[in-house]
Image 1 (cartoon, rainbow over the protein chains, first blue to last red):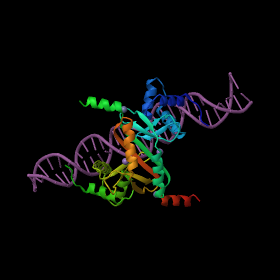
Image 2 (image 1 turned 90 degrees about the horizontal axis):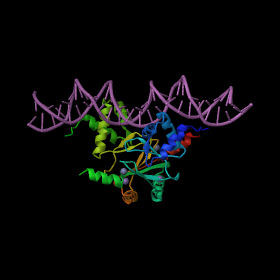
Image 3 (image 1 turned 180 degrees about the horizontal axis):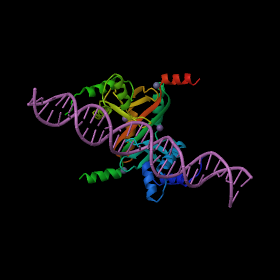
Image 4 (image 1 turned 60 degrees about the horizontal axis):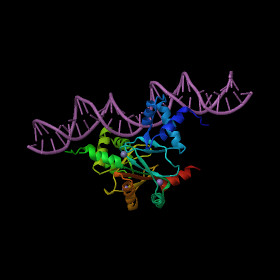
Length: 134
Length: 134
DNA sequence: ACGTGATCGAGAACACTTCTCAAGTAACAC
DNA sequence: GTGTTACTTGAGAAGTGTTCTCGATCACGT
Ligand SMILES: [Mn+2]
Ligand SMILES: [Mn+2]
Ligand SMILES: [Zn+2]
Ligand SMILES: [Zn+2]
């Protein structure tokens, strides 16, 4: 059975306090900066658990780092992510879901899963980038 | 300027000889097993170059490893990949392309890129798995 | 053939993640 | 509350994939 420790709660709280996707290391730094002595390994373990139980979503950044987020829903969905600030928009698209299912079935594939993420620059970051490019 | 070395040719040849997506390390092993003394760093460099120039496609496996493949076309497309044997099917879907573009634009995002991959078990691997589960 | 700078490769260095194991502690029974 | 016990923690070691360093090598224009 799974115990309730302040460490797990701290990780869940830190995730909730973050709008976008964050890495385990970023979360660990954030916790440390508030004075928490939580260990890095524990943050990794807690995040893996949250992802397993579906309480957190996870994805890989284009650089290969695992990022986590406490999403507003447990339902299957995808994300539009600002590659600069991490701002995340949850997106749903039945068309993409059925397309993914169909393309797998039509090719004889089973146990199909799909990775669908959109990365870009959010409006704010776009404006900032344009201003500093001057 | 870019030089032509037997190392680059060996990497390109090994990629071409492979149907599915392969990792840099797998390619390095494959080359070594044929007697080639090519260095691992060189394989990494050659693959990065091929990916830069568009001569190879790359994606991240669910485990976070970078995989490469010499695709049949340079045009933008996606992949249906067997997570067991690596068998790859190239797929195109204008609907997904426009959807990705739209969802980014509607949310004010610029410079949008998307990651769309479908992983599953190919027909052969499905049959093998079913047989050995006995 | 020569000169020069791009390329190579072995190993060190890196970044992220997981493992090890002794110490700590939540949960449960009494 | 006390004791028991198994789960959890955390510091550091280890693992894994990738990139860097830098002296040796070699492609290529002359
Ligand atoms: Mn989906
Ligand atoms: Mn596309
Ligand atoms: Zn942003
Ligand atoms: Zn297969």
